[in-house]
Image (cartoon, protein in one colour):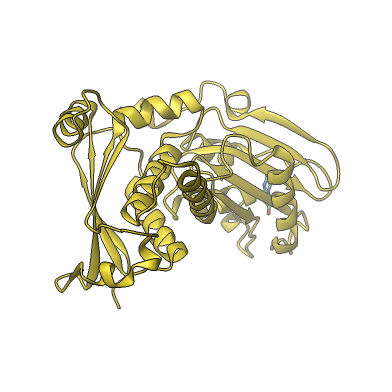
Length: 299
Ligand code: THU
């Protein structure tokens, strides 16, 4: 059974890594929450010049905009879930999915809005995809009633894809608690020194880790690197914060971990403490001044 997916075309540079995977997650989440699955839509990511031209041509509005949606279904009443028959007419035998229409996103406007709201570009791209998918499902924001319904759906989907916890919504205390909870998972039969870590990524996800020791001692992996590798292997590339919890005292990250973390952000917050006690907050820059990073290789 084919699963909901977007046909994404990137026509302008500047999208953060992992954006396409994020947009696919948003589409699947929106479809599941609407209760109308196995759908598809086209997405074009363009610049302000292109979206301005399209906005003028299609809507007679002579300025750029953040996102445009072009639904195939003309929902007379309600949304896709109330109009399964109309949705069924859009069945495309080639993909086995129902084609709901097209979305156009301006990466330039998304960048400006991310700055304005003080959240990441990934979050803004995620939100614009949520908003546009809902238009394709028949949601709108003309009347107060429609707007309330659409906002409610936006919040549910943003929560479902873990994009609602960004911008300080996840406190240092919460991240530290997630790290401390990982102490139970630590595999430390040799040192008996357990460590837990939790990383908050730029797109608002949390990845946890613990130290994993080895009978060949050099094979030991610290909690921080366990969490980092879990995050990167799930598509994350920028870390906003890492919390590290020791059992018997604060476990300040070792030199090797500082270098590994440096790859994924210079200004991430580093929250260090002992389980059940107060923690300290610093930044990676403070812990690793004059660090060597991907920029130094011209990457
Ligand atoms: N360890 C960590 O997991 N993180 C740190 O910040 C310091 C050290 C682990 C590695 C090893 O399992 C044990 O602590 C003793 O070095």
